[in-house]
Length: 438
Ligand code: PMP
Image (cartoon, rainbow, N blue to C red; front, side, top):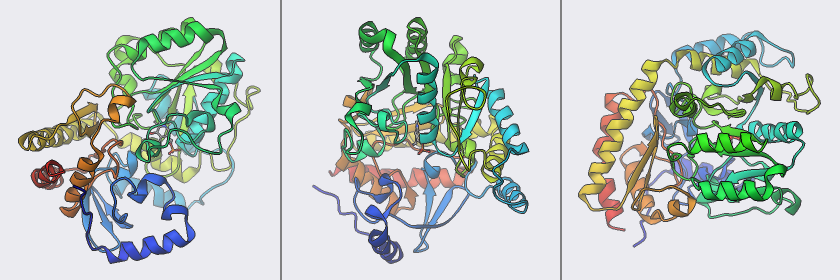
């Protein structure tokens, strides 16, 4: 049966109709359109702590947190105050400032990177890291994994996750064959495929880029030792290992996914990309890494990269304030909330006999509506989209806002207190029943 996502949200419907007249698909980023789950996207009027309020006045516990950035919850008073104070000093100068130095120091202090360059989006970060890797190695080929999403960079859109997985798009018009032809796409968690690709093209591979722990096909953590194997293989072949921590950075754990594997196992990526949490909800992202590689970047070196709003003082102030407040206690709180919610999901779906796999890395998790474990994109595609849609709309009708796609991670914040978690737990049994009826 197909689930009827009916539900009266006249103000959102009216805004969506107006949006569709002037914005393609009515949204400025595809997954927001609810295409995979059906129904009208909620237009958000305001947010506070763990809650979103839509244009019709409905209040939801937010389990997306702006797709990751809002680690401390919405409208955190200290972040707001810092941003408000920064705005009184002007919003952009196109010249260096103190907050960007302090944010760079904070990032270098808590991650394996030695130097960092700011940009405005995760897409820019991965695009620039790829260019730098090519400039540094003098090689052209890039390896990426199916189901990994690194932003809408031409050469990285092949077999990508996120909105492309949601919409079932495996490649996109507008990417020249010459660009796509420089990308080798391999199945995730598959050591043999990596070994074979390096055996065939080792001396032409500039970089291998991987999500530090994929979250764009749902959460599919690396098998134990997989990232270490990738780092070691790249080093052996003179290629750079780019760990994309746009989603996991300062989110999966205080130092990112690297804290959970590289730091423990004793290896470092050559380059790392960051975004989301480090901007505190404003447009800021970064790429960084080995000092000798970063020294190739303009104006220190010949690889050009620039940005009018890069290191913007408001964005870097929001990011810096967020990271300074993101203490071990914050991650412990979020992990406790994630424990409660993932246990609740498992219980609720188990009781009604719905096949599921809850997968997690640090504070990040997602739910596949199929038997697990899910270790790669092909397995992720087994998830029952209809069951997820039914589950999603039941949760929404009970005031819980989930990702409108079965292929996205769920995000919590330190503002998800007992009350917010209790509301999620109470909604789960009937959502599980709705999924079970599909
Ligand atoms: N890399 C990863 C791992 C991401 O999750 C995303 C965005 N979801 C990006 C890159 C692109 O970031 P942005 O949307 O800021 O361009």
